[in-house]
Length: 155
Ligand code: SF4
Ligand code: SF4
Image (cartoon, rainbow, N blue to C red; front, top):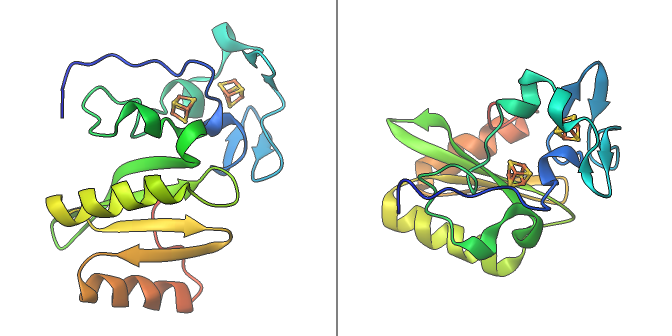
């Protein structure tokens, strides 16, 4: 970690592109249905963008304490990390939402190594499917949630 680092989104628009299912000013945003205010030059209403979710949202790459390397910017790694999305038996669970068909394999490998080294169970998405990485009991619990049709993480 190198706390205090200031990153900016640059030309990443992954969280506006529909990979995270959000509602923006009454518009439903979901996969293959990006925010209607997203333009080729970024957010067309940037100075008036809503507080929620736009101004409040900080992905796991952008946050100043992020351990993620520069090359894992969401639009390059094809994943958006929701860090410490919830606690499992006191351990923070990270969630990697695919930004595209699937995360880049190199990025997923990095996250799994980080997860194992730091005791941070991981949930990740490939296509429409969700997978768990971490202690066997965690994997079993998440698999059970998925089998029951429950979303395995918190929106
Ligand atoms: S996904 Fe992260 S880096 Fe990309 S635009 Fe959203 S907050 Fe910025
Ligand atoms: S309003 Fe702008 S910042 Fe908010 S989701 Fe749409 S394009 Fe992104």
